[in-house]
Image 1: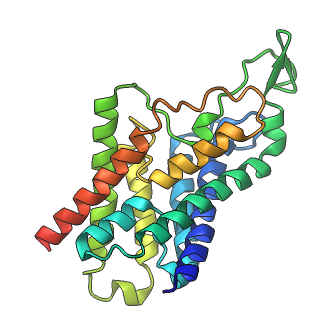
Image 2 (image 1 turned 45 degrees about the vertical axis):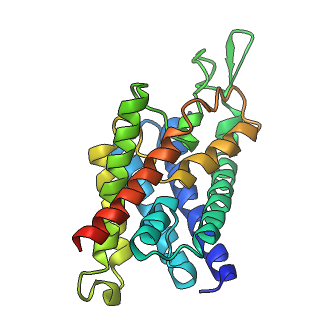
Length: 253
């Protein structure tokens, strides 16, 4: 794979991933969305379908990593580091692009997220509800802010992603059948349902950091903070988890 193919594949694939993922979070969170308050199961499956669409699209060009933790885990296992930076470049650019696209899809809903002079403008027909916080649409927020616990959660959840992804390569016939991406997508759904409660399961540094950067600069009314004090955890945790998964895979298999 050429560097250009890798960048193009990872940009497109990661953009699709974030479009679906941030899109489902917006659908569930924002007022005047037909899917509002439809719940965590919807969010988990939305992210899983984002992996499905993004990875299948990117696979012919880049292999469809879409995640620096996956790229790091593969590099730790194989010892091949030469193209890691190319993957990371494409993933970050794609994550930011996907966040912008999700914002544009829900532009009217974001613009309705206003409150002026003590009254709600365009929100639930003037009921006076507070504007909806928007960071959770783009990036993760812990339910209990405990840096040690949050970091441990992200490390373990990322190992639960990357180690099976590496092991799937040993399953005879799985790659040839073309269903590896489908199985990884279901794995992501499972992680969301089982391990996503404490932190929102970033398990992907680009997935969290790229949209957080975009959230900082988007002209969203009453968008609230981008919470940069927490931002290192969904970056460091998945990177540590990905590296540990690569080491475990190399040692055990």
